[in-house]
Length: 148
Image (cartoon, rainbow, N blue to C red; front, side, top):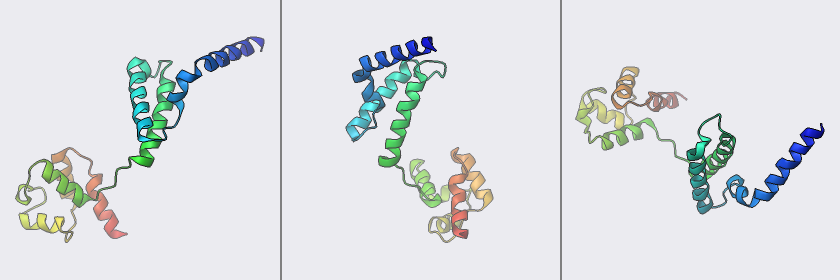
């Protein structure tokens, strides 16, 4: 018991001695500037070995990551895009016209899907998922939300 107490005392003394240097890495960001600084600290910790689960820095990296994630969830949330918006985005990114999507069908069917007059069926979803290398979930949500 005495040995554990001596060890705890040393850990506490070391923490107090170095706290002014460690505290910024363990303090929740209050502003975008704080957030950017914390992300930079996290990058440094990961580069110094924190990405390796066996490293003593792994726990520190995890704690900093939790703080970064919490800030992002509150301040940098990504809006959920519906399947039609995702399809329009993919078409734009790949320079595609409605006629360039045989996975859906002829241009008139693609037009109806984009206008919300038709829903994608499972065959179309699977084909689009394969073509663009993305999860079918982004397209399936359309069918599920329409039924609720």
